[in-house]
Length: 462
Ligand code: G6P
Image 1 (tube, rainbow, N blue to C red):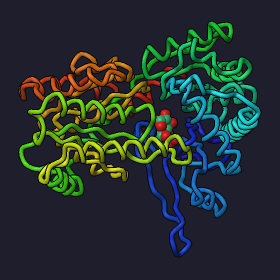
Image 2 (image 1 turned 45 degrees about the vertical axis):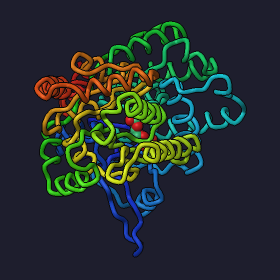
Image 3 (image 1 turned 90 degrees about the vertical axis):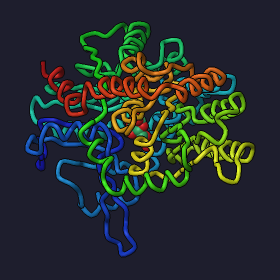
């Protein structure tokens, strides 16, 4: 891995990096490695490849690690001032760009682009510049740089100015907004975002739909794509890792505990999400309530296992959403529960082993986002499921392009329709469920993370 300035041949830049630090009670720093597609993707290029991952210091522990000079080979954390980072990450990236691409605004009242927004936008520029400068410093002549996501839209353009010799790619893990929604952004800001992205040689998206939306925005608001190429790379599930990990002892233990919670002879409808507005957890619960209401035969015979893990809790709207999920789950349990049956088993504490346990047990997986770049849960459940699992899938998830044929499709806003889909999924014959699940698993693993990353690199170099 690269250790001296100007030596890295392959660079990745993202807000959230592969490792985070916590300060222990005795003052020592404890490192925790993260997972996800990018982490396993990057590992495919091997450890001697002079690769460097540039990311933000996010926690107090991360900042302390930077100050003490503690770090991992191949990772450089940027200690951007906490207030600048908060404006850029919470203010612009998560409250504006995320909302635009997922079309989450309640438009009679939002968005409001005022002086506060302008102030935060300046921080977003500063934060992007810090990444561009670090990458310019670290990259070897002609190196390949892959910038990730909506946090860093200005980096390709800034880096191009600093280092015209580099091959610069950008990959979006989110949807891209259609032009009529994207144009809500003030014109100068929309122009900066598009020109920043178009500083890249190549832009990657998870599906053709998001790639087309970007192209339409570029044509309408930035005079076209210019020399920038566009590619689609549908990140798949990591089958080898998941199959192995899901049979380890801690997962087996959690399966036993979950079986206790669920009870004997009951079907399970599983969902696993960050408690994220776009995941549509509340409407999922409403649809489940509708199912219990309209199909009394399922009462006592089904349990909705819902894992909603904390996310972006600095934002009030996320805290409120989490409270609403909890309130509604309690309400359903009060309304329908009996001494031996809890209709909704809700867990709010992040636990990957328990997620895998639920995947293995699931009869039905509910994946009903309003809009989602890909949705890896939809791809992971069929890979891990023990007996085969029926997938109820929103047509607005990127994964729908690859999995739609063998899933039961839902319009995520249609509660009645989602309840019907849940009934259909629960009623599916075991043989059909197993067959569909097998085909889903094959489609879900068509492009494993390692290949996904290497394809992007090859395309960038080619
Ligand atoms: C999405 C984004 C990622 C982000 C992740 C978790 O998948 O595309 O860039 O890292 O959500 O969100 P967080 O704000 O916790 O990093």
